[in-house]
Image (cartoon, rainbow, N blue to C red; front, side):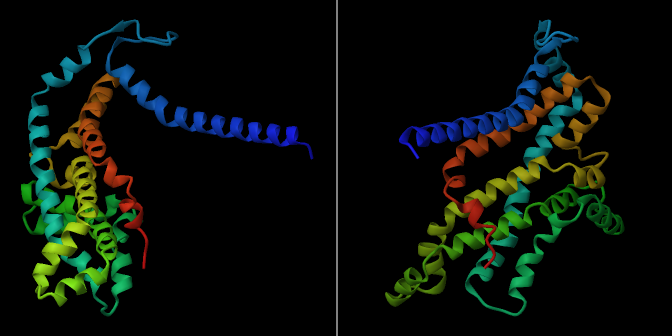
Length: 276
């Protein structure tokens, strides 16, 4: 086969690869572009490809809603509490899964995925029946607990991988020079595992911030968060209102993910879902 033929095959492969990348980019990005256009479209009628009138009319309509400020405030009150509570509960478990061997360790570790293995609406309804007996319906504590369900996997699996990545030899060396157990953890293990814990914390925060179904079932009518009020706005207002609120809801996630991109691209997220 001639050298020219190999060049043509290589060029064809590049064209196919670029075409597939372009198609995937369009599939992912076009809905986002459409969402942004809808948010700033005062008037957009068929068959026009772009809005006839641009403006901030629908943004003003959203911010006129008296419940919006309360929903934003409540969301940003609950999410840090959920993240902190999840860390307090899950990080000791993650360290135990990483450093100790005990009966049913692997089944217990994998069972944490059970929350995401089945439709959550059934789980939320079952929890709501229990909350009703415990007088936790429509309470701040009830919403915090229901949102913890979404954070267990992130705050256990990813920190477990981060602890696994810390060489045991370093801990042994610290003990050899006289460091006690907690000092070894504080001075050696925790700093090296911290990037993975940060990734888990960010994902737990976002999971709490975006949780809607459980909060809707347990928290209504008094404890309405941003995702829940978005459902109300989408159901009762024109499409641009939903687009505006979707952007508002996405901004915190975008800011946090961009600020943590160096941790996310370091492989901590992928490593967290490797079962050992």
